[in-house]
Image (tube, rainbow, N blue to C red; front, side):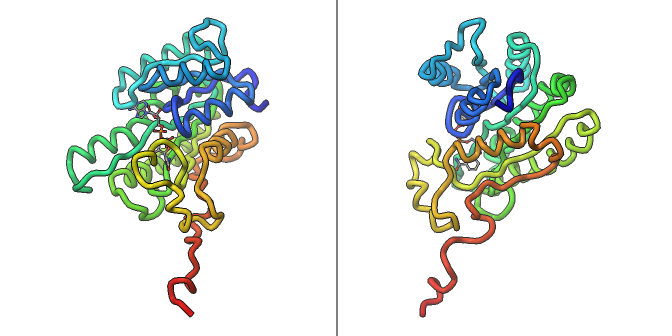
Length: 257
Ligand SMILES: NC(=O)c1ccc[n+]([C@@H]2O[C@H](COP(=O)([O-])OP(=O)(O)OC[C@H]3O[C@@H](n4cnc5c(N)ncnc54)[C@H](O)[C@@H]3O)[C@@H](O)[C@H]2O)c1
């Protein structure tokens, strides 16, 4: 129970990796504020776990929030603070990419960078004072796309930016007791793959022979947010089944006998 008496704010907590993080935090004793632009989904999932998000004494509460909008983020974080009185963990998970015919399109870049780079910064700004007070931890979700050329340059640039946000804030907030890290997932089985090919089509990229599950990423987020990582800050941790180490497919296969 690494998060007994602690409060976690999880953006993007209604689905996928964010929901797995909410479940993990609840399982380990935290009280959780779920911030998402699909609040009704989070309320439903919590109800399925027997948690009534509307009850004033429940261990989880849901706040409608659009991380593209600073005022919306500020209001949601203020709501979380009013409800729980403190913030020990910020798990910034909300983000994503939908591709674009022109990978350099101006409007597309503004949208994707605002969501994946500015969005986490808006969340950190809103939570900063509370995290300093609690000597808390920030974990942002990046991507392998932010480390090597796996495609989607706007998304890659935004996710890559999180690495330097984490390093710089690790330096400025470290003396105040706040740690800042990034988890960089490879392919993870979430709804983002529902409309495309099965994620299993990418297994050849992964030496460990499978794609990731949301719980794989939630485990790493929980580790970096916990006291077990109390001397780790400013890092970007790939959680990618070895994908960045090298593809599963052997050179011999491509070269033939
Ligand atoms: N699934 C993957 O293969 C994969 C790989 C690498 C990184 N990631 C990253 O993991 C994170 C979670 O992705 P996922 O696969 O779980 O996706 P998902 O669609 O299952 O969940 C994303 C959640 O974020 C919320 N969200 C999206 N935009 C938002 C906004 N503007 N304001 C508030 N909430 C918003 C959605 O409503 C949703 O609940 C993203 O940052 C994504 O870039 C995913």
